[in-house]
Image (cartoon, rainbow, N blue to C red):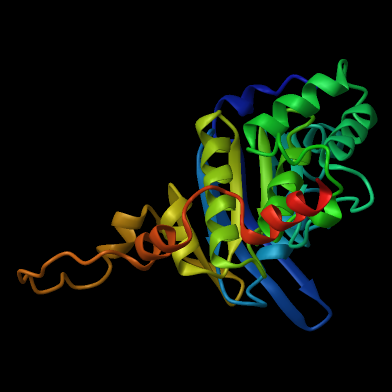
Length: 273
């Protein structure tokens, strides 16, 4: 199954949202949301629980209809061209949607066959290599760590080569090392030309990953810009000479290492042998 050709508007932003509104009875979740996402960029939709982040993603993924406003994804209108939108995107939810009984490779082959892709085995092998899962590819997913499952989940989202991918709070519940692994995978997506819309409630996640950040609060985008632009909204800090100290991430990686395989993985591999 191939992605349909994009319309002329697709030469502009990958995602265009204007005046999006959504209510559930008396509860107004979205009150006129506007933003654009440039192609090949990472756009972070930042907000607390209940801010409406997942509602925005569901509307863009054609899983939910907006009450008002317009939205286009890869040039296709989410209201009138849903089929084109669905073939242009992939959605990764807050929890990994992988089959624990199957191996990592079998999960990928299964999805490739559902997409009617040629050479599903080669596609699986390429994605395992891309996400540093080759050695674990033959193991049952039940033995994977949280970070490995999430990386596999994202890899499965790319089987159809979608130009746009939605990641809805992809690191929820993950430990620090697993979060860093997922961050690296997300950065690789953008480097490969994929447009990523990321929803998160973690400030450091938006800071680490996003080319642009929009803060969604009480159903509205209250600020939208690059990290540097957002930082300029506050008064400049007083300049003083301070010896640079290593960040917490530097300390964490120095202590546990950056091999991408935790103790659980090594113990599991040892047991299987």
